[in-house]
Length: 330
Image: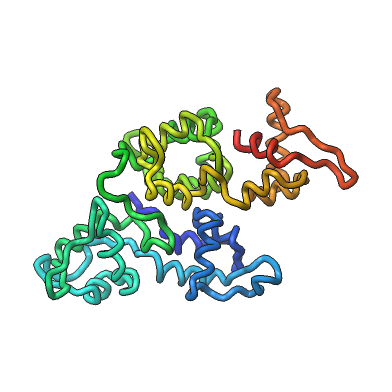
């Protein structure tokens, strides 16, 4: 089974040489909120447009290099040199794996309280190479340091013991509230199809940590407010929500990275109570094309479903943003 592409590889395939925040989010599957945070990193490539002069754009090649430097590379441990009994330093591990020392050095602290901590160093600060290789083999499909591209590692004694870490088409149906045929069409979208990690039996599966942010970004899951019983059940099975009570701080942080804030971001709450919006403004807000909004409204009308009430103004047709948000995320 071919490993899933790294964020750098996904970004390298972006169609434009100059990328906006939305372009980077679309190519990598990260949320725009995460990408905006990345752009604040001192080492992030400089924008070709000043921050206060309009939409910032970044050179694709520079962004790809940044991702390569900050996302732990996939490692085939069978090809790594050295005997398992070797004692190695952080610098040795970086040299043997080809991963930058800056990506390796935070791992012991980052995973100290994880269910799968980084191997323990001796009093001289060296590690057993065989233990390091085994650890890397378990995590080679995951991305690097917290604060760069991925949610934090799970903590010990989680409130909920995950029963799965992948999503099937059935789980996607439960999450999105869409039927089997609609989900078949959805998972053919390139940004979703490319994330699949293969099949388990006859069922195609997707890593939950990679697919959930995309579903949130595309508007198939609510940015805020209550989740449906089915959505809650799936997230409990994945370990992102507790079976009872409130999420732990770690779970809440992961969901926030994915794109979900129960209370809603300040920006989202302001949007919902703001002025009526045109279809063009709605399309921009949800990160889709104007024709996608028109098609969605048309399909709902043809199916006899409730649609947002159009409001005729001197400037053209407008919609109440809260009413439209409820429709869009239904």
